[in-house]
Length: 300
Ligand SMILES: [Zn+2]
Image (cartoon, rainbow, N blue to C red; front, side):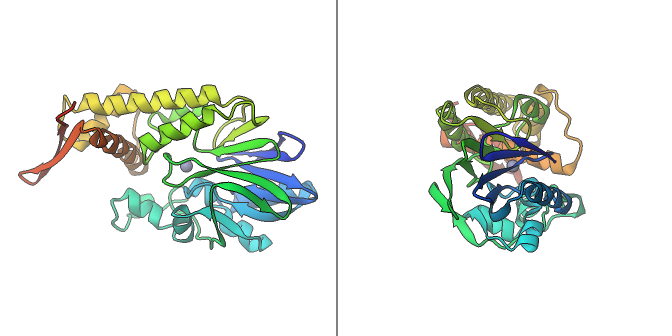
């Protein structure tokens, strides 16, 4: 994990999953903790090398690659952990992540790896939108739902840590179908992010490099979400089952879904698009002869 200075008092901890630091008068707030214990130890070494001590940890959203190191950071430093409501439930009960991916059934071994099942970490404070001052460190918390149900992003020290509200262009290209739980909420989040250009010197996404301007990336992400929602809608003209819709979307994007984890992540994203289409009366769910049928709705 590399330490990159963004401003006088904000740092980007760049790794497979990014983290951030906002520093003031020898104290620091850590934003996200990386994937696991090893990443957490690297982060803490960087904190030591800067000659500061942690005042708190903020978790933006409860995906294992962002909070997997939280238990280690909390155990080693004793600092309080902040997370948004709902996300906090997963941070404290990480089995919920593979459990929801597996339709609420206890997940099989294939879903019990560190990318989907993190170490549990107690959450001390629920994070809410608005200004937050932790030991003299001034932060602004903003809602950013869509990729996760109650993700929040954190600005401080002249930088804005946007977590997985925006994927950098190469990361977006690699993902094909980005994970999402609410496509309409995410489009609203992206619309708001476009208006933050100029307010912060640097924007740090959850994966990939920082950027000085977030608007263009937000627009690219929004275009991809609309494209996937459109692919789901198109698929309904060709197939009437969920598996067929997932296959249509992946094939059209020239993606390969190589294992159960990535298949189920794509399935959740497709279902998020279907929920959006359902809200617009463009898809109907029926069960016929004990078979789930997804078909174009009355307005499609
Ligand atoms: Zn995420």
